[in-house]
Image (tube, rainbow, N blue to C red; front, side, top):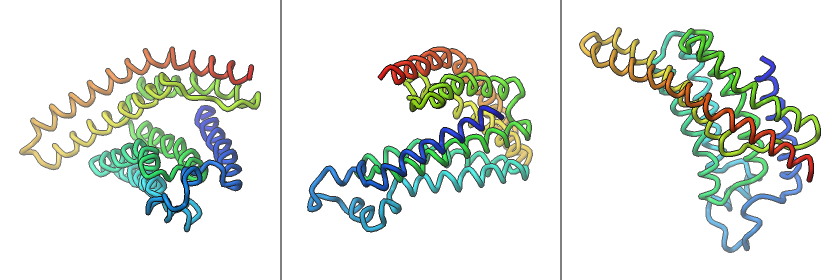
Length: 242
């Protein structure tokens, strides 16, 4: 729980820093080009003070997806929950890309993404662990990994330095998402087979493959989290020296 609390605290820190930048309107992409060269999305972003953008739309879809996924799993609807989890993960991966592609990146969009990212990940993680969809060993491993990356980040934050996520950290976070999704898929396949006995042999196979993939992904995340922690520490030290 302390790890989750830190993630939310770090999200709030990012929110504060990005809202400060938003107030000064310094970092929005469109301000680096003449107004006559703005595309339609940049014009909409300007009229709505960076609220209506493709990136923010995808972030909002991710929030809805996370809420639907949590509700579905809690109400024993793993098929719907897995579909919603897929929407949440896909939109989270694509919001930054959409913002960059349409040249509508802004501090407000970054703040919106940061402040909602970790809470919705934590919500889905706790829901799947509570329902027993994530095996206890996997849940404990993922939680330990989050704690291992949170400790050096919290030290940097305490010292007034903004922690920087390196490549290994991003890979580890991605693997954790994949692991969660695979175990959810396993549960969904099992339920689908129960509801459609004519497909039970196929759904059992899908469930076993997804579950095996989840365990493999857990092992892979253990391998990547070690250099990820080293990267967090190194970036924190570099940040402190500058």
